[in-house]
Length: 153
Image 1 (cartoon, rainbow, N blue to C red):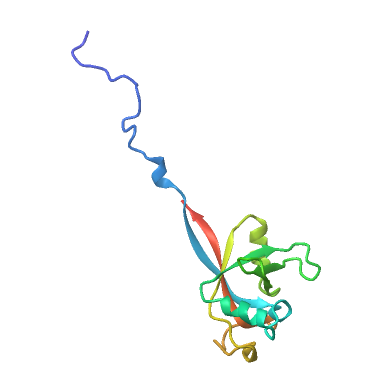
Image 2 (tube, rainbow, N blue to C red; image 1 turned 180 degrees about the vertical axis):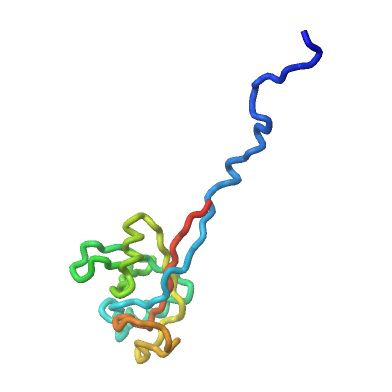
């Protein structure tokens, strides 16, 4: 027999050093689109007390819900916009919704938040940022931003 010892094959050299829980997925939100509700005038009557009170509750930072409506007869890429208590506000304009709708159909998660307080009824297509590209259907009394949840390792 020799005077030196042979290391047995018992385990990895640094067993217990690698902690898998430290590598959980961390989420972040990516701004995808700044837009305004299309068809707001068809869903919210701002001449009624109920409509005005609804618009007054939509403060900056208020979360809005987005729902895909693939069976919508007017737009196959329709994305409905509603409040957290399911009061319908309108849609993401058809001129800007296709990419988001396709990503929603693939399972991506989106969140929307009110950007500014709703403008008075006389300022339906307000002059905020005149250089912005806007669709004729967008009602800038209710501007909001859409964010996509992105997972990174």
